Image 1 (cartoon, rainbow, N blue to C red):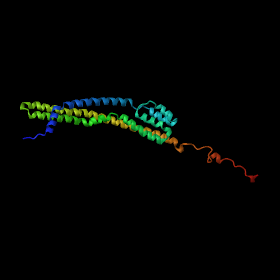
Image 2 (image 1 turned 135 degrees about the vertical axis):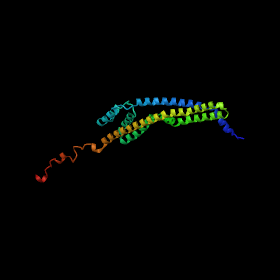
Image 3 (image 1 turned 45 degrees about the horizontal axis):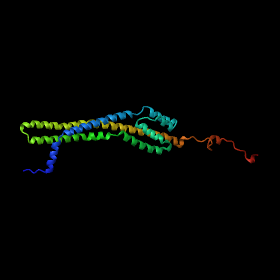
Image 4 (image 1 turned 180 degrees about the vertical axis):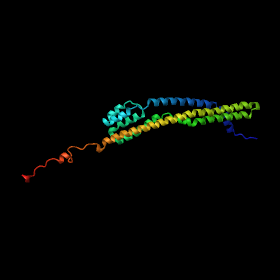
Length: 241
């Protein structure tokens, strides 16, 4: 005599009705979304590529002319590096401390813009195999349920159902591997661009601090310690006359 829990029976009936086919459709939709995100991010990184030589020219202009001329060279230039440099140059007149704070804020904003939608790829890559495994479990449950009431002649059809259920795991891995690879590549690109932006910001800070340092200002010609003042003729004393 077997005791069957009504809740267990309801859950089993739900799983048997659902089957594993809807898991395959779900993985198909997720793979299409992931492919669209990959194409969009690749196009975004292509448009935001670093302009060759423009930033280096702006840094040289900053040393020769000043922040305004350097900022004019970076106007409307794409890339994270150019955006961070522009934000730093706009605060150049406020001093190195203000530029330092602006650099940190600009880096965080640009990093968030570059990492947009990448979290979906990472999440899909980590969880797609488990979604496929869930579909396989559902398919095997249904196959064994059919096997319990099947004759010897129906065993072959049940085994075919188990093989179809295992396809869900394979599809899950097929969706996960490209998503993980693309996520790692794009994340590495973002990290390199952020590091390059921080280097450029530090170069701007170095130029600003060098112009504000006391050793950069020449001594005044009218200083009492100047050689011309030391060689000035002395006025004759009243006793000499």
